[in-house]
Amino acid sequence: MIDHTLLAATATKAQILKLCAEAKEHSFASVCVNPVWVPLAASELKACPVAVCTVIGFPLGAEKKEVKAFAARQAVLDGADEVDMVINIGAAKDNDFEAVQEDIKALVDSAKGAAKEIGKSALVKVIVETCYLTDQEIEGACLAAKKAGADFVKTSTGFGTPKDPDGKALPNGAQVRHVELMRKTVGSQMGVKASGGIRDANSAKALVAAGANRLGCSAGLKIIETWK
Image (tube, rainbow, N blue to C red; front, top):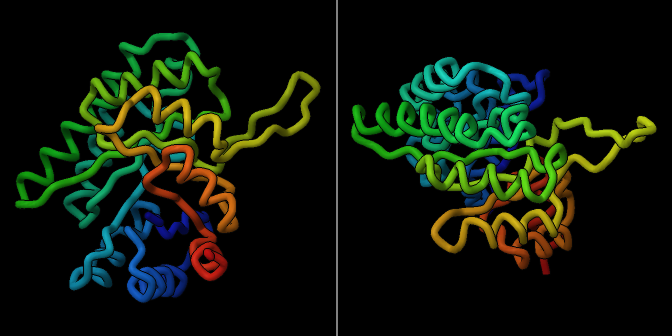
């Protein structure tokens, strides 16, 4: 279930190679890396079942849909098997879910079209960035992803910076109640990925129990070492 993740701006080649080696050793679902590292990860993992996942429109989601679509196509051609995209968060806040759906569909069509050209398939996960959205907005974004043909909805980038009216920082990662809401909204036909702040086995278990069938973690090794 684990996407073994390293999305830091400071990630080095040595760290990406280490990430891939760990993913192979522990049979993680994928490694999740920034697009610049996709060719290296694809080369390292080409002879094993660990997928290569990358992120598009990350972490703000504020690029035009055409830019996201182009980036997704390039990532798939570079070797990505899975693409995690960030929605147009502002459109979701405006309750303009038609725009949210169009944004997602442009990327879905581009990524899956590129995959078909080279004789493979591509999986698209849609990051709704729950820390910025109301429950109603989360539902709307998840339904937009479902209508657009995405494969998964995903909670968070882990890079969000929500604050209360007094400027106090609020949680920015995966929460059980959000995973429950997302699973209820999309039903059993889509995946739900929980990501952001999952650092121990108990947190991971709670999110799986809530309906997540994929976990995005930079602490994947710690989680499996403490899983009982």
